[in-house]
Length: 245
Image (cartoon, rainbow, N blue to C red; front, side, top):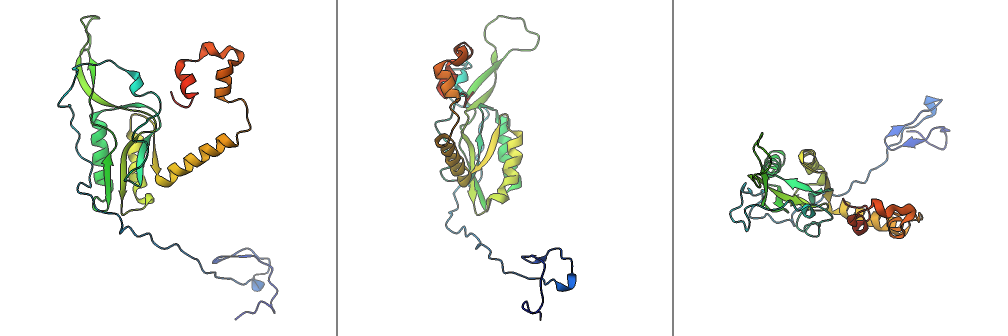
């Protein structure tokens, strides 16, 4: 047993490791105790009646109009509904607007059923089934002749809307691989979120606005028409000031 009072030590020790020393016979290895966090218990999470994602119909049963206009306002701007986690702990959130086909719904449903354990991890949709008709004319057809026939149906998704939620008796690191695989296959930009990550993003956004020392913001330049920028901006630039398309 070594005594620190009798032997001069010229090395700095880390937990469980001995760093470099010029005189090895004068170095002493020190082992420190580590304090691990207690394992999280998921006993308070109830098991829902339908733990898996439900199947979405490819064609809606009832429609008010057989054909509809494009209406880009359906995917433009921030989402005002389904933008917060209600029951789930984790989820997939859209960063930009876009359209989801029936194949994307099936891809999400099948990927989750293969990559996660449905006995411990549960999921639910936060978007509606495909209901917006998209028309298409046959290849090689001449111009005119009216609007084409309905080819398929899509679901419009705005930026900031949750596509689905995931929760259950599992940690965030266990479901990240499955959610990240789905994220790469989506037709628009998405991000994997959790309750803590959404709260941290909101806190950082508020902190940036309060401590912003740069007076040349998009809102300031647009409102005061610096350098005649009015002729290059549109109505949506004055509505969201560059945050959304």
